[in-house]
Amino acid sequence: MTLTLSEQDVREQPQQAALINAIQAAFRPLARILVDQGVGARFAVDAFKRAFIQGAEDTLKERGLPTTTARLAIVTALTQAEVERLRTSVETNAVVPTSPLARGATLLLAWHVDARYSNGFTGPNALPYKSAPPELSFTSLAAEFAPEVEPNTFLAELVAAGSVVYDADRDLYRACERTFFHYKFSTAAAEYLAYSLSHLAETLSRNLRTDERDSRLVERTVYTSVPATPATEAAFREFIKLNGQKFLETVDEWFKKQPRAAQAGRRLGVQLFQYVEEDHEPNRPDGPTGMNSGTDPTQVRDARAPRRPHQQ
Image (cartoon, rainbow, N blue to C red; front, side):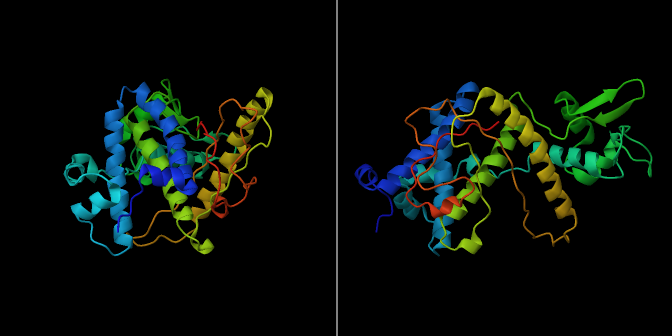
């Protein structure tokens, strides 16, 4: 039995057509990044095909079916030769890395809230790059909260991003921001993109593929029901920076109190991002059909394709 859909099938089945529209809407912001970086559509299409094959392998394994080239060709509607080529390419074995930007955020948060490296009056302590134990330093901070990185290179990244400042007179470093992000595109930024998008997509995929409410992950949205003024947009940006950071710190403190699992344990987390849509069009709906602010989107089975958020 063929598991794929023809173009006519897609046109005649509203749910599949809505899904294709949703995928296209999700790719559009990513396409802007690709164009900015000079990546042509052919390379992006190959990347999507590799991901499609990997997703098909996951689905077949869930169903207890073999992941042969012939079966994958049927499921994906690709030729066997193309499936073989893409499965044996180096990129097929790529895994989502632990983002250096995520490690930077963990380290900076610890620098701000850990009583050994900070105090409640003056904030993060100024640290030397390296010192003899038991004196604390940036090297000891990195060894504890970002052990995978090379401290000197990582510190240079933090300084370049403006998250850490260097006091040349005292030869000390101080954290001045809780966040770490490369505003110019870089390899680290690309890794962060993979880290963030893969987690969001995994949550959406898990929630949309099950009818068991207890197995779904938390996924909530709050948005304005009418277009916002420029002043409100600016105020919201400051509001969410302050209160969103407080929420993340609360989560981090909760994690610190939990027992450490065995090496095979799974990592947990939550991501927070603000979005700003394109200029509102008068005839465009204010959200997916039947979906109100804060509701569970997995309950919306016939939702129209959502508007395109722009991650900040």
